Image 1 (cartoon, rainbow, N blue to C red):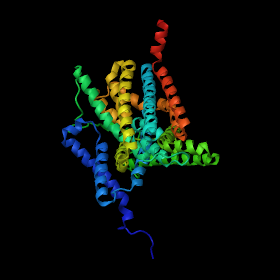
Image 2 (tube, one colour):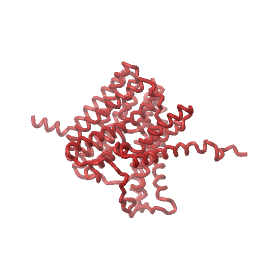
Image 3 (tube, one colour):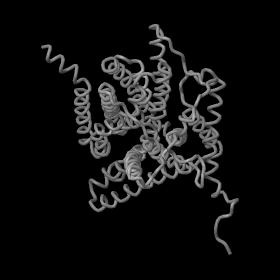
Image 4 (cartoon, helix red, strand yellow):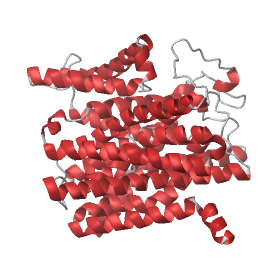
Amino acid sequence: MTTGLNFWDSQVWTFMMELSMLLGAMLFANMLRRLIPALRRSLIPSSVLAGFMVLIVNGLIEKVTGESCFERITLETLTYHGLGLGFVALALKTGDRSKSKSGKKDIFNTGVTVVSSYLVQAVAGLAITMILAALIGSWASGGLLLPMGFGQGPGQAYNWGHIYETATDYPPFPNGTSFGLGVAAMGFVSASIGGIIYLNVIKAKGRKIGLVDTSEETEDLSAQDITSKDEIPLSESLDKLTVQFGLVFFTYMAAYALMWTTSLGLDRLGGFFVGTVKPLIWGFNFLIGTVCAIALKAILRFFKGKGVMRREYCNNFMLSRIAGVMFDIMVTASIAAIDLSAFSHHEFVIPLILVCVIGTAATYFFLDKVSARLFAGYRDEAFLSLYGMLTGTASTGIILLREVDPYFDTPAANNLIYQQLWAIVFGFPMLLLLGVAPKSPTLTWIALGALSLLLAIMLVILFREQLFKKKKAE
């Protein structure tokens, strides 16, 4: 007598149905973008539009029937792992960065600009929610989710919103997950609105641009764009795409093993390490996955150099496609996971609106000034790529960049790719403050002061040449 599931049992099909609904929503959203010119001109990605569609339709169904079409844990799991897997896939790609002195300086400046923007968002967001906490009783440290939602995107917004909501060693943030995801969702809207405003401003100044319309666009890909001569064949005993998926998932599981092993040590230390460092480690699964991917690439290069391996196993084209799928699923699932019931509380809605509006304005004007001073040779390209990435995702930045640099002739696109190392190095102190700030009112004030100090230091580094020239002139 068997005790297992039958193929027709709902447990066998639930996850597949939920994933199919998300993918179906993306296909429908993409069709709407192709059919409705206004949607194409809005610059909102199909995955974002699909997320809002699922959120609204599922909310109506739940209100009428009392049942949701999705298990919340499914949406949250897809969001969390989609971020990690996407970053691993990107990190496994091979490429040559700029070797020129000016190119290296622009990459460095871009990394510092990214961290400075995070800090602008963190200081502005935290100051707003601290004031609102005194006035209407909202959660004082909630503003720290602004750089996570705007600067880091839906994956990190979910990670830290969930950590704040489920933490047990300090007062939890009610609806923290939905707040973080709400900020991320509004970030995509901010990217669209701000991007269109900027494009119209430079158009009024006489620059020729055109809003993205890819409805009739075709891609002309050569064989060299898809594969190279020294790579494994497309299909032999194991399909080439299977190899790419295997490398991505193996690397991600190596990251899991590293996080799990580290957590065992932190559990033994207890106290501060469990409440602060442990959530930080699991919240940055994508970063640890990236490190593991870099290590794997080094190992593969070593074996190839020794003659043990004769062919290249990582394929940039397929890895990019895997990353794209993961990020699309992550974005759609993250927006669909927002709890609409949270919007019935004024202590949730008012901070969300103020944080997003002021965060958008602060990011826009800060990047406008930085781009004019540091990237004068391609100011518009630098602004649009950075603004899109720091309110949405890197893909959003590329969408805006293509309006003024369709063939990526300027360094703006490469700057986005290669700035990550500098952003990680300079941004790490801010990340530590995320787990410290909510522990007490005193630590929240200390965090605000520390973030302001870090911002001042980053600005000095960012404008070092102008400051030194000014001193010499005096």
